[in-house]
Length: 337
Ligand SMILES: Nc1ncnc2c1ncn2[C@@H]1O[C@H](COP(=O)(O)OP(=O)(O)OP(=O)(O)O)[C@@H](O)[C@H]1O
Ligand SMILES: [Mg+2]
Image 1 (cartoon, rainbow, N blue to C red):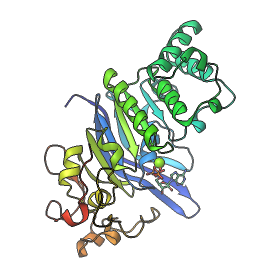
Image 2 (image 1 turned 90 degrees about the horizontal axis):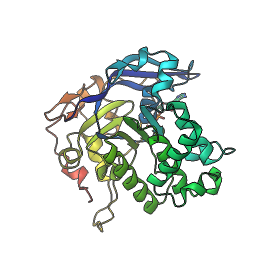
Image 3 (image 1 turned 60 degrees about the vertical axis):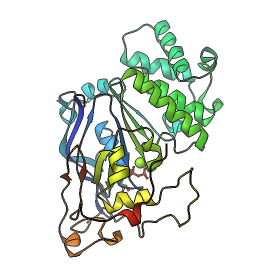
């Protein structure tokens, strides 16, 4: 594996609300290497976006706060940088694209305006050069007639085209890391596949690392080298994509795999569904947060927090009974493609 690019250690990001303190990310550590395609998976509310926003230092104070942790990017701790230094990293070295491009694009400016502005913010080029770079960036994401499209407003483009523009913007400054937070969730299945394929092709070419956030294991399967499964603000399991699909040690991952739809198979039995709902992150109970939903839980699970343990080759699981559970009944699903 190549050199570490991003090292997150013991990250805790909390929000103060009227109901209490939400422990959105609660002691998370992971590393993304140069050029790595790193998937982050988990149900709604598991802390995926908060992790991404913490890396970007976009957690809104005073309600939100990174309480502890270190986020080393190319050797420097982002949490110790001044706002100005961080602004230089954001967009230029770490770029982020979101689920809904309409919230990220300004409706009153043309695509070209916004692209050129992004490029000029981070690269020392004249406007005419920035326009050329922008047109090239649209061409790279296979937008037809890029010169003409520069004059379009966001609403004139389809959802898929807008997401291509976001990718063009994200990659226009050649970042080392692209964080893509549910970039295809709002798109139909065919467009989703095209966008993922495009993102993979472009980031492979440039050796850009990608942190791909999704609740869909099927999406990460074809894209990522490694997968991190999160549950209630913590790590459940992490490993190579092959290992997670073939040899999961964690009941939660097994549940996600078992509830995954496969396009290439008519299932005899019903899909597995994980019973219950994720816990509140305000005053969460002691022990493993998955306990109330786990088919394998025993007494210790409700009282003692299982720390992530490494089982070799970068495979980590946070379960007291890993690797001894027989999860085949739950899991069943195998990788498609
Ligand atoms: N600004 C905020 N104020 C209070 N709580 C917040 C805030 N932002 C996030 N949270 C809480 O933090 C937890 C993690 O949220 P996060 O958005 O990271 O989830 P997620 O895994 O990205 O979910 P989804 O799949 O729905 O996008 C949730 O319980 C959420 O309600
Ligand atoms: Mg999210």
